[in-house]
Length: 357
Image (cartoon, rainbow, N blue to C red; front, side):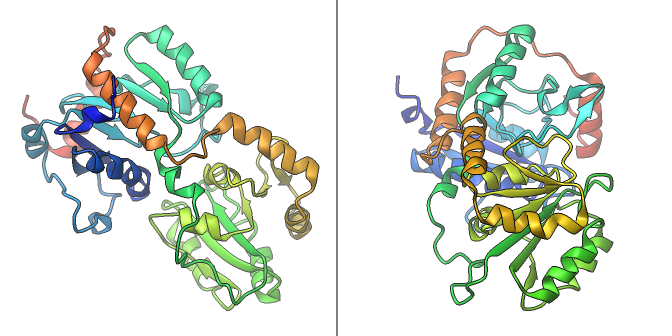
């Protein structure tokens, strides 16, 4: 059966709680609309800005409105979704597994919270574990599809605002997580300030949206002809514009490396051979120069890593996610009941101020 053709006249909800979720789901929205499906957006919590919605994107403003609309499929680039809203729940992930979030020795990327009917995985490194978990739990399916947000990534973005064709310097992108313990931002401030003053590289700086405001302001104050601080809900043009990345443990480094471009990390304790990891702040500049030389051994290790993380470069991951979702909806496989999650659903009801049953 052509499960893509089955999209027509069906309803798809984008359930989001962070600004970066817009860019994750828009390639999927484009495929749905092109095949005659309907799309609505529901914004959960106070960390997602409705001003990032496009004029032609329709927002459902309440749970009652959502339930009246009755979506067939609910896409979630996050960890949780209420079980009291209709539709098959599909996890599409908000990033790659960086391995930094451990809870009692368990990687949180593989924490099964009992919310989803289908996990659409990005590549072999996550698919294998999720298939094992599906067999163990029995209440969800798994399909390896690739990650929808990367569909536009593998073709050149026109009129990229972060490229400067009149500047021949190499472009260094600096990204950081918000965790005080893991973030490079406070630890490498003096070095990055010096780089911006020396002018050897063109520097772009972009931080996790939860980065403390005092650190953000500190880096904004560094802006000059060599350093630009960027705030955006779509990092893909930013990633394309850079030649090398300096990062810590943020999962954005995994998106960057899929371009087969090198990444220098600072104190990434789980760093594999595909990363150039440095623990001495005074040796970061030397490591960046080494990465920019693209030594053959390093680039071979990067290629092997990418094949395991996300082997798809065809720009068709959204189509695979949509087909897998429609297959789940139409085949309605016999699965065990999901756990009731009373406490989690109570908290979500309270956050939404929704008490109808």
